[in-house]
Image 1 (cartoon, rainbow, N blue to C red):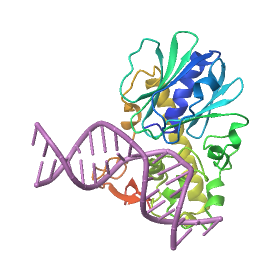
Image 2 (cartoon, rainbow, N blue to C red):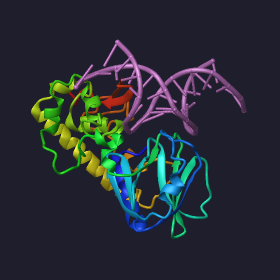
Image 3 (cartoon, chains in turn purple, orange, brown):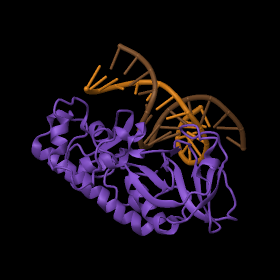
Length: 271
DNA sequence: ACGCTCTCCTGGCCGC
DNA sequence: TGCGGCCAGGAGAGCG
């Protein structure tokens, strides 16, 4: 399940090996992922060079000569660079052939991913235009969450997962960050003090940074195709640890559902 | 505007 | 062994 750190890791791994290559062919084996694939995709991208791979939130943007390929991995998407003769397996939905006998292959069991070819400025596309700031962006004020959370009555966990507020915090890291910050995930967003909100933003930033660093070491070769990111699992302090002892105080951790998402926390350490 | 629920999809797991 | 049912998860759509 790709979170922001994994998407960033994919980007960093592919960039030096793919930039400068020309797309010679696009092959789609399904009609749609989360959104329909453009039936003209092959004709649109064929012959174009990939100039850059950038990331916005959990989207990857492949900058081409005349447009942009926008890719979201959804929940189970895996993008790998493989040789041309690599056998096609189940859920290999899409190939972008390159001019060096390699291809970018997209596999997505659950098909929650998305691929669009955009002409014109990609950041103004409706999927990207409303997104909040990058959590690791340098221009983020330390009290940003405090300012934005005033008058917001939803649970703080749902608040930090809201893309319009802040991008990149998925269900797992939301629980983790709230544990690190010592904040009960059920609390109304507006109830946070300035200090608590600053602490929470710091926790989000340090967790994402650490996860990127961990992903950079274990996922760098892109050969794992099962989608199971073993790298962060051992680092998780609360997620998936219901009824196990809190690493800080030893009390059993609890779980509940917030906004249709499983949530883990320590009732002792998080207030 | 806000906050909540539903939905897309498949595989893994549970209990019977 | 088979099968039904439930759950996971990103995030837009749609509702009140």
